[in-house]
Image 1 (cartoon, helix red, strand yellow):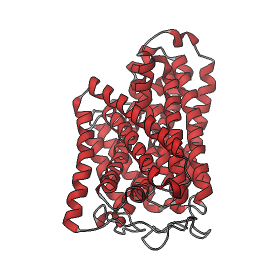
Image 2 (spheres, one colour; image 1 turned 120 degrees about the vertical axis):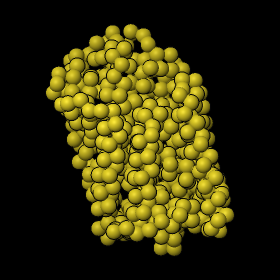
Image 3 (tube, rainbow, N blue to C red; image 1 turned 120 degrees about the horizontal axis):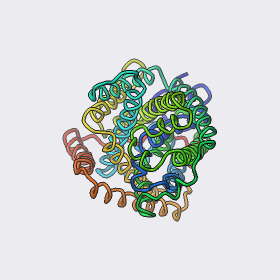
Image 4 (cartoon, one colour; image 1 turned 90 degrees about the vertical axis):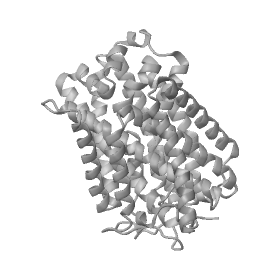
Length: 450
């Protein structure tokens, strides 16, 4: 049975067995699907320009930073289970004010940018796999077409989202497993000593860029309201999803470095994994890895759309977005789903892959750091350790500043200017909408233990 939308006053805590539609396995799959949609397939080439052959180490650094943010989210989600995830976390932490409202609009838009990244990556691989040349504008059509398809999947219900992610993740990991095994037979350890990159600082720059590949753990938090026992199931799903993707990222990126020279990785940054597949298994490898890329990027849009629609639905019900985002279409509050799809399509249309990749990582480094700042204010309710929350804040801030500096230095200026504009616009919209409507932010009730 599809989970019912949470509404103020009805309770958003642990569901009983008749309403729970998200299990640990499906929530883990949603997290893996959300995290594995971009980094391996679309960002390794970009990351290698600064990390050189040490891209696997950059993935390790990004995963290490994510551990502390996951700790914060898991504690908050277990205590305040909700379809809105971080949207409700921020309201509980900062109260009914412009800070929570503006940040919630910003994180909604951050997920929009991430979905645009995944859709652009999907379009790039789709074009490479076609047996004929296609014009540049076809990438925009393919990306927007994927967004439309994902809307249909999400309209059917949360059970199909979870099941679709399980199937996609199993197929994807099977293909990547075959690639890894075959790749070790073609490995050249000399590639690690061939140079390239900017040393340790380059690895940290790359870790900041690759941070978006871990944003899927935030999507998992939005499934808490659809779990039977989120206090136990949510942390398990979040840590399990992170563990799976860190291992996959490190192993697969190591194989890429071992089978392709650094110059070739940089030259094929948009579809480097397919090139590595071809180096290992010829045309069969190219097609197989390309197919895995299509599945991964599609599942990234699918999982993130699920979380972003839930976030927008909850934000609208709490008073931070127009009521149209919570309006029922077919199966419940799907106005948010259509709104997210339209905004994602706009970013796909107007921004290239590199720009949305940098913007997405910067957005989530900022959002996850601020969530931990707010968590410090309510840690007496969640039982979280202040020291671990401070570490999460410091690490997210450090990577954010490093990546922002790199983005400003390397350009184009439209990338960081757009992100700053989106951040500022989020608070402008919150202030104007609040003054125009007089609406106040509403917390969802929770039955989590006190």
